[in-house]
Structure formats: C-alpha cells, structure tokens
Image (cartoon, rainbow, N blue to C red; front, side):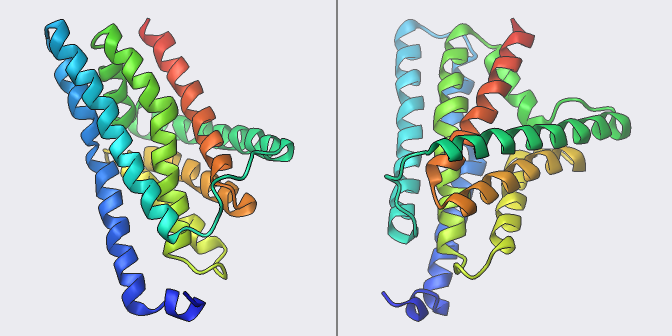
Length: 233
C-alpha cells in the first residue's frame, strides 16, 4: 500500500477505531477479574481455574494487540536490543525516576497523597493472598509492559501518525498512557504516569525498536513491584 493511500481519511478512521477498542481493552482491565475473585476464599480447584483464566485473558489481549501492530506497525519486532540501547534504557529510567520523585513530593505537599489510585489497587490485589502475588508479578513485570507497549507505542505511534511527526505522537502517547493509569483527580499522579509514557514513546521513536521500550517498561515495573512487595511483607 502506498503512503498516500495508507494515510487516507477512511483508512485512518478505521485505525482510530481499532486504537479506541485497544485502549478500552486495557482501561477496563478484564484480566484483573480473576484476581478480584481470588481475593475471596476459594477451593483449590477454583483457584487453579481462575489462575489459568488470568493467563488466558492476558494472552488473548496481547495476541489482539500483536496482530493489530503487525498489520499496521512500521518496525520489525525481531530486532535485538543493542548495548547502546541498554545505556539509553538506564538513562531514561533514571531521568524518569527523578521527575517522578519531584512530582510525588508535589503531590504530598498539595494533596497530602502519597499513593495513586492505580498503585493502591495493585497493592490491594498483592496483599490479598500469596497466589495473587505470584500472578500479579507476572502481570505487572512481564505481560502489562508487552501489552501496553504494543498499544501505546507500537500501534498508536505507527498506525495513527505519519513518520514526519516527531513530538506529537510522543505527547499524545504519554497523555493517553497517563489517562489510562490515573484513576483519581490528582494532577501530579497523572503527570507521573504521563511522563513515564513520554519517555517510553521517546525511546521507541529514537530506536524504532519496540523491544527497547518494552525493556524500559519492564525495568520500571520490576523495581516498582519489588518496592511494593517490600512494603507489604
């Protein structure tokens, strides 16, 4: 398909609709339904079924996002992460973490809040029982970064924006990422998630390698998960 036809109005409208559906899939979080049920006393048989269902829902969501990206994405998913990419990942994580620290302090001073609704929800799930801890670690550290990078970076930036756009897709990706993760009215918590989204989008655009933004996302979530578990246990 030539460039002009790819960016024609009807084609672009179709891709916008697909993105909205992918966005709602992530925003509604159907994969967390089994986790919610697991917080109640259940038999071993029910726990096994719910655990399998949790993984199946995640795999289905990732499959849908992967198929969408393969159809409309511009970059090869088989590219490896280079040594320079890892340096880029570390620098981006440190800068993002510094900004997050500043925004967290402003949230405490302004709203007297130290935990976002999204993070509190994750902590509640983690504290329900040991099985949910294991399942949530897989979700937070592995599955969510893959799913969200396929949608917010891969699909959004490739399918909805021409390569000539530089900063606009980064800004839009970050803002929508923040909206999907912030469940309250605290502007600083929104900005915390949005700035993470900005860095993830910037890394993807500069490297044209979705594995790099996935790796940065995994690193961010891994350290956050470790800190949450240390506070809980």
